[in-house]
Length: 59
Image (tube, rainbow, N blue to C red; front, side, top):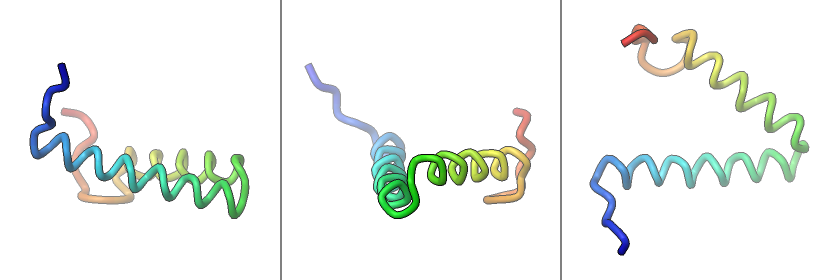
């Protein structure tokens, strides 16, 4: 039995699809090390509040 995704889950799924396409392109153009490093750096920037809305990381 497959459960339909709600609106928020559909939105998140689209972002994961976009992220996968971007990662694949980065790997193709510059290799796994570059793609991994860039994604880790982006995650650090998000956690530090340097990207996106400047929200407190602690909830």
